[in-house]
Image 1 (cartoon, rainbow, N blue to C red):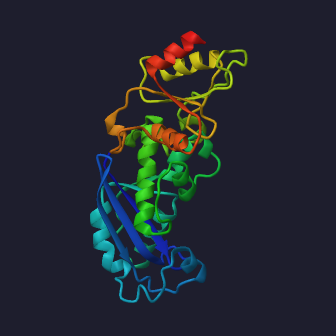
Image 2 (cartoon, one colour; image 1 turned 135 degrees about the vertical axis):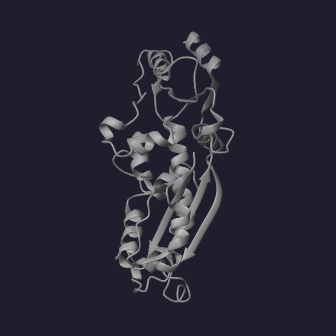
Length: 284
């Protein structure tokens, strides 16, 4: 999972008015380098933009122009998968390149806003802004600081890869397909109201010895509502085998970590292994 994540801030509504760029390099799902620079946009600063990111004309007075940092930018992203959150950053880079009449940079853009809308049902139509997604996934960052936003976008992508079981190359294709046809098939089920486990809300993470869809059917038949992700309604989490390559340096999946976080906050969630899950079904 090798890619770079990029974010920019602008001084005014003109997308070419880049005043900060941040780039974070990920190798094998781990951050290996960060680069950030203030940029003199050679343009005015709008009060609303300053309110959002706190960068002023005085702060960039001695900063390089976009033309002067262009070689660093090209070195870091040329011929690489470049992750952004929403098209804003891609368009801003393009407009700044046009402004200074510089050669285009060849890279493969991947918009994580499009990824999360396809990876998580709850973000499909709303709530897929970086701040909200990061909060829901327990990713802490300093919003509207370019290198922090870039890092958060990269970590969101890693969580999506882990959650959906869709690799980086597959996301490059799926992110450009209509949501209705590219979204990973949901395992969400309504539980049998007469089942012994009625009222339980179950979530699966990791690989099981049977297809996850089959496990979902068994759980629903026993009465469990089956959900795609851990939330405040979750009561059961079944943990299967984890692919360490998808854990982004962690020892547990994002669902597992979120469940433990909710447990620490007082929510009642039982974390089960696959064998425990089957025993629970036998009892039911």
